[in-house]
Length: 239
Image (cartoon, rainbow, N blue to C red):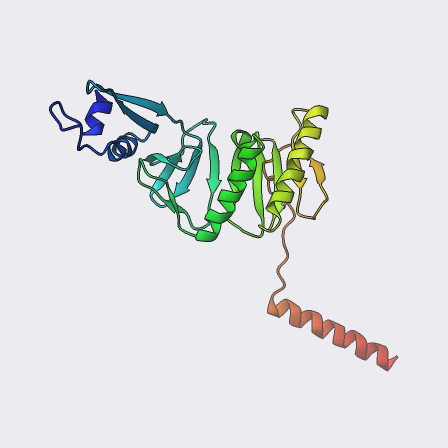
């Protein structure tokens, strides 16, 4: 019933003049979780609407709220808070994004879109996109990916991304054979080289509190020290 309502078709409509391509687009926009709507018509005039559903894969924090999108970038929902304990990939952007449910989210900065599209293309081709839990392109000179929540890939700048990602994929495959639970930082910033640094956690270390008091040198204290130094030198000269 919901699909029929979204289609806008009614009993008695002239199906000969109906533009079914526009009807399909209307369904896909009205129902965000519909990835593809395909309409077929028999000679007798029977209409069949076949639906292919999509699912959430990405979450983006923006000024509008949290954008939930599928792997193709179609906006499924915009909500106030980040979903808890979700397996969605967190996409971090410097410029943010705008979104309308049922339509593709739009990057505020074109450069970030280009980097994102290339990363998604390479990762999808390698069958790894679903395993990326975080993609950080807030700094184009320091792009980062997190694989399965345990391996942080440091890609550096956006040049040679294809080579860097392929090197990262190879390193991941090798490390997974050795230890599938390894937590590490994988440095891919130097061309044709990979450095794996095992870590206890990907969380930044807590700042240690300073227990010793910090002595602040005041103007009066500094002046006193200068006077004592000068007196000492004069006494040495007299001797």
